[in-house]
Length: 279
Image 1 (cartoon, rainbow, N blue to C red):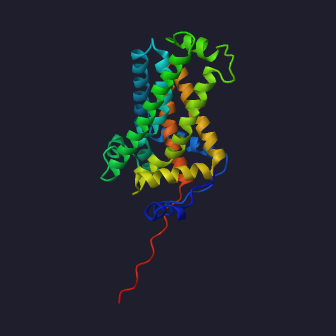
Image 2 (tube, rainbow, N blue to C red; image 1 turned 90 degrees about the horizontal axis):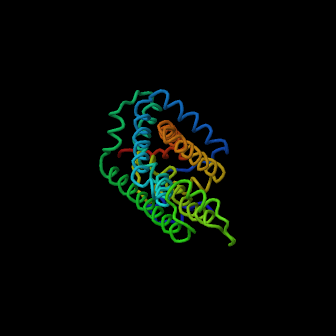
Image 3 (tube, one colour; image 1 turned 180 degrees about the horizontal axis):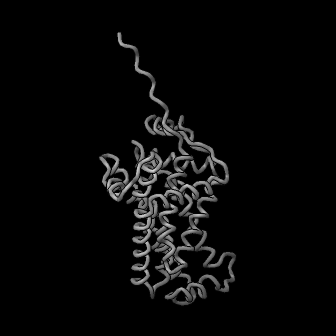
């Protein structure tokens, strides 16, 4: 699949993309982003740890509500990955302040959640779109497991026994089908959001061109983006495997690293042409 050619897009969208050029980064770029994200977390830990604690508490509430319906819980947690970038909006602002040599506070986070219009409306629209996609995956995942599982799936052990370790006779088993379906949904959402939300927060750009810039960044950098998606998944799974306590650190670490991913992948806007001399 070739990168989007701005010349073939409608004028306003193409101009917006040309104003936010995409860079090609080295395959080890995600490791740099993690290192810089960790430095940001260490320099200003309170906002990040509060975000992580809130996400861990939300996960615990989710487990409490659907603990006996793991067929729904599996989809809900994977859907969480789709909407997590919106939750990190305040931490992008923290990284931006640190980048500019200032010391951010909790007020920095709150200000990021109350941007001036139309920027705020754009963030809300994009967040609603991600939430809709996450809800769609939760329902699709639940329908797939309840329809094709050989026995009820009510606990994590049931999921492992009935879905993961099922002796399927078909070409693709239920677990493989669940993974393929999830990947088919997650890949375009990841590509369209990997830099879109920090871009929307940082610059004056509409949702559609921000999504196209994000997709273009993913297409221009397939190996770094594949590694980045894998690292996000691994960190999230490790956070969940530690009784959700690991999310307290994983969520802010990945959020700060995502800001640095955006900074490397999207170049600065070109300088405006000089004004014509006064007559």
